[in-house]
Amino acid sequence: MTLGRQLVVMLRAPALGVGKRRLASDLGDLAALQFQRRAADALIRRVGRDPRWTTWLGLTPDASVRRRRLWPGLPRVAQGGGDLGSRMGRMLANAPPGPVILIGADIPGIQARHIAAGFRMLGAHDWVFGPAEDGGYWLIGARRRPSLRLPFAGVRWSSADALSDTLARVQGDIGFLETLADVDQEADLRRLRGQGDLPGLPSGKSARIHVR
Image (cartoon, rainbow, N blue to C red; front, side, top):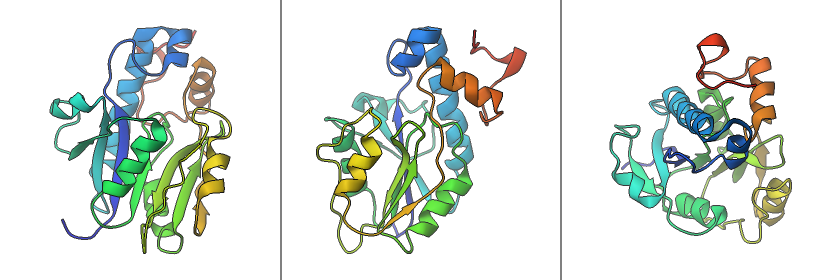
């Protein structure tokens, strides 16, 4: 593959009772599964076919790579084992040549313009981050030139310190995109829906995901 921009969407294959556990505790397993699948479908529609980059699906569990009916037509790779830092590090290190950006699938506000801005920023910075409102980050990108030194050792994942821990370990210049909100619990879903900030997801009376 020729040198180019690589986008990796980190995805958990949708399964009842797996993933989005805080949201499931508020709304139930079925609603959490519906959100997970619809959010991923909408995100891939928005960014997955953009000709400005090549989109890869980084899937977990690893066996889901063989489920070709899941988001067909895009190249896919297994995330592998370990904590989130280990899996992200593997995606960053093993992606084809060129700048690489990783995003998750639970930030409904991600648009193609954010990805494009991240790649532009990597023209002048070694790293780029998209901060999340909860103290984590919804995007991380690396130029990977002249070398890649991963900043994930000792990061307190799923905490308000995830971004600050990562930044403390980064070597090189850093650029920042806008802060976005993820959906971890019912209050997040309610707030984003009230702001009209759930692009590509059902809302109102037609929605099968109901906020009490």
